[in-house]
Image (cartoon, rainbow, N blue to C red):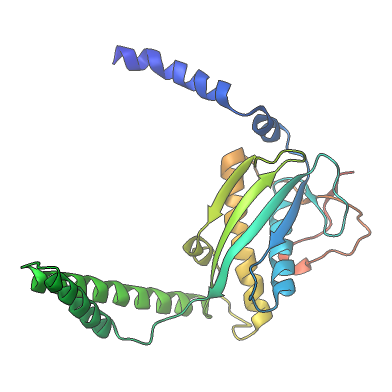
Length: 251
């Protein structure tokens, strides 16, 4: 115990000493953030998706720190929030029943186990068949629950987010956005449940909530009295419905 008491302060000091100075500088005084989005090939309406997601993230970020307006040349010291969406597709519910999935899995596993000379092949098939059927049933219930709660079938969104400082090829910080995090952050739609644009707006807003929450947790940001932007106030706001209103000007 005495060793731990003596070692703990040393570990804290070592961690601080090993922190990258550029990350600490960003933590203390973040420059304006410039949002850049990339979407995978094959996504329907890629430009609309990119614009909606970027607008939602700018609007949300601007309530925590200064953000470069869309179409505005960022200042030299600006840090890029580079978002690479790696997967964007509708949630699919399998047409196969959980029982059929379990039987097919059990037969396949049992057969392979028997061919391998395992005397417990029947048990293996039974066990893995039960597991596969239970998993399929749970997944189906979860998918239906999500659609019932939201009023629409959400999309699966996966992404990598990196903070890139100018002239530095190594990210200040990088993290992954998982599909269930985004789905859990979505709000139900009372209106526009069959409106693709309204659904896209809610999905983009949920994605922005997740990303900003991660950044806020990492860098200790708090909510600003009003949104803060870098850019020309005369420029038309890009997405009013995301709360992207004219805020504090930084120039």
